[in-house]
Amino acid sequence: MKLPFPGRLLAAAVLSSLTLVAPFSQALADEKPKVALVMKSLANEFFLTMEDGAKAYQKAHAGDFELISNGIKDETDSSNQIRIVEQMIVSGVNALVIAPADSKALVPVVKKAMDAGITVVNIDNRLDPEVLKSKNLSVPFVGPDNRKGARLVGEYLAKEKLKAGDQVGIIEGVSTTTNAQQRTAGFKDAMEGAQMKVVSVQSGDWEIAKGNAVAASMLNAHPDIKALLAGNDSMALGAVSAVRAAGKAGQVQVVGYDNINAIKPMLKDGRVLATADQYAARQAVFGIEAALKMLKGEKPEVDADNVIQTPVELVTQP
Image (cartoon, rainbow, N blue to C red):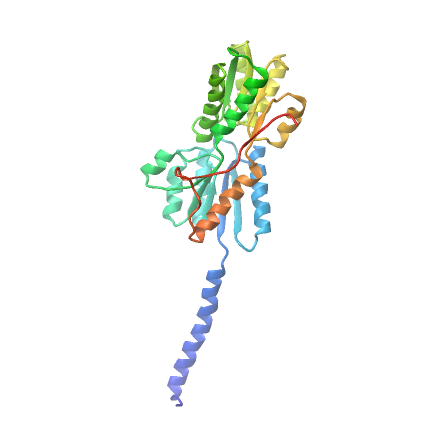
């Protein structure tokens, strides 16, 4: 049956609109998700390595997602990190993979992101589980057992270089961060198990200069200290300089955590006895993989504590 002229016009208009809608809908379906990686200080080699690993992974999976990476100036600049997350919310990212500078202070902006429909995955430093629970938030943590890693380092130190009763000092990371607390706990586990005396625990804020200042202070206040256990390799670098300046090279052992490139020559020549490798280049990748699964509606394989465990290993002299 041949439609009247007005009917033919209407049919043509409907067909035309359908041909426009179909490609538009397909474009939306085919749009790559935007993943924001928000790290701590990019002055720390660990986070630069993390960022490089994430960029290499995105390059190899360019058709799967877009990556936006950001970092803050120093380890304690949580207010600027909050601003970065707020910018990511406004820019309309689909997922946020975050290494928070503070385990509690970042929770409100994480809630803001989740309320905006953004998928959030926590890496490196765990957001405080109790604060998350108080806000009815469930955020998977992807990372290593920091307490276990530090305990491995401490046990090796005690076995190889110390004897019961020796004095040691612990240079802690930012004290409000969960990973700093867990590493200190792991060091204490090892020292108490080997009957060492922890005479001082002070924060070096994860940084070389602050680690150096804290180490120098400990060596001055406790001249019988036999070892300095640093919560990351940046602070260990500072401790090595302090030991040398105090004229105690070879007398005071230094251990760290992270296995950054800068520490490797010191492991080789003995200025640093041991560290822990938590695979910086893969840290963000593990988180990105979890976020992409969640964006597809898949549930990440977490344990009973909402954690996806990643590897951590003791590293000693090569």
